[in-house]
Every structure is written in C-alpha cells, then in structure tokens.
Amino acid sequence: MNKAEKQQVEKLYYETYEFLFWYAFSRLKNRPLAEEAVQSTFLIACTKPQSLMESPNPRGWLTSTLKNVLRNMTASRVRQMRLVQPLFEVAEEKTPAGAQVSPRLLLYETLSNVLSREDIHLFQRIVFDRCSMLEAAQELGISVQACSKRMQRARKKIRDFLEKME
Image 1 (cartoon, rainbow, N blue to C red):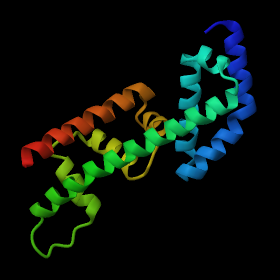
Image 2 (cartoon, rainbow, N blue to C red; image 1 turned 120 degrees about the vertical axis):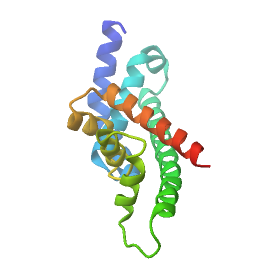
Image 3 (cartoon, rainbow, N blue to C red; image 1 turned 135 degrees about the vertical axis):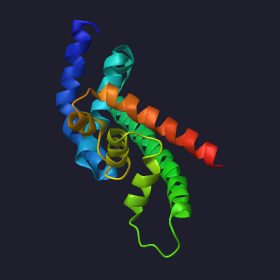
Image 4 (cartoon, helix red, strand yellow; image 1 turned 90 degrees about the vertical axis):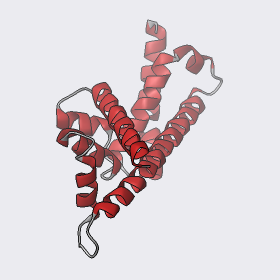
C-alpha cells in the first residue's frame, strides 16, 4: 500500500468507523465482536486498497465488506454450535442416569479427553461467552493470530474425537 492509499484508508477509517461499528453492533449485540468485525473490514481494505480506491462508492465498499465479514462470523458461530451439540450428546451418554450435572460441567469433562485445560477455556470463552479473538488472545497473553490458530486446532481435535465416537 502506497502513502496515498494509506492516507485515503485512514481518512475513511475516521469517517466511517462509528457507522460501521454501530452497524456491526446492531447485528452482533456484542461490542468486542463488533469492533473485531470493523477491524477485519479495514484489514481487508488494507490488503485491497486499489479495489477500495477504484470503487465509485468507497463507503459502500466498506459497508459491503463489513456485511461479508459479519456473514462469515455468523457462519463460523453456527459451525461452532453444530460442533457443540454432538459433544453434549456424548457427555450425556456418559452421565449416570438421574444424575444432575450442569451442561458446562458435562462439556468440560468430555473436552478434557481431547483438549488441554487452557484450550478448553479458550473454546468455552469463544463459543459460549462470545468472546472476541482479541479478548481471548489478551487473556492468554498471545497474539490474535496464535489464538485463532489454537482455536482452529481445538476444533479439529474435537471433530476428530467426534468422528472416532461414531
């Protein structure tokens, strides 16, 4: 990205951030996730500055990009929840009949066969608490990229575990 593109993206950031944030917040109902969505939007803008600058409506380009980011975030959340349901089923099968155990405890016990304690915490924070990757990364003292990769590996381990249970 050259200096002129950088200045233009920065100008658009200051002009549109508030609108984009509130748009994302209205969809996600979560401030940190809304901030993450807007930051992802501008990350995309920084990787495609020419496309943004050539657009007859750069603000519309950013809004469309944000909508795509939100769609991807929602799809990711749905996939994560689809992964959780079978975990609960496995946990319930292992629970003695009539035992009163909280769903989170059941899930923790099941996940402890697959993930480390830290990865279980990460999984629960992101899936159940709807924590952003930034928040989770800060809690763990790692980069957002490392946090995202750990979450990706955790999901794969869970999928592999569920496939073995079938």
